[in-house]
Length: 125
Image (tube, rainbow, N blue to C red; front, side):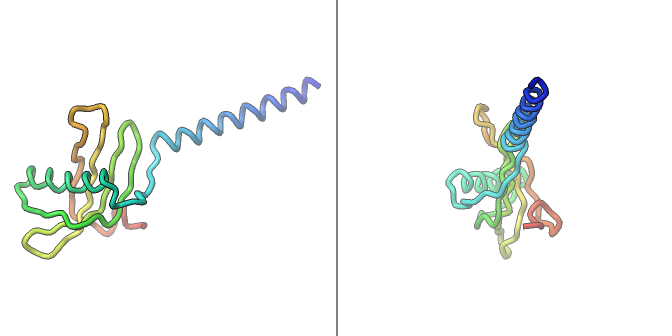
């Protein structure tokens, strides 16, 4: 009887540990595609990225559209977006990363803004 109780307890413990591991993956460090690229927050993030880039680089890019997006959840949300923007020439693709910290005064921060490369975060999808 004691052997059965220990076995049941061990199985329960392993299931509990597996549940915590799954929760950790879901809430701490997961990255997933953004399904609604027309979401107001996602559009704001994309336009923010272009505006911040223009300020820092003294550029005149104009936001066109979001092509793809992924959200990365760690201590903050990081929006990785593949966008189209144009200046005086034809539209080009750019990869952006914008972090969002809801409890910070400066909630949004441009982490990166660069020309799209074929080997990037978005090359697999």
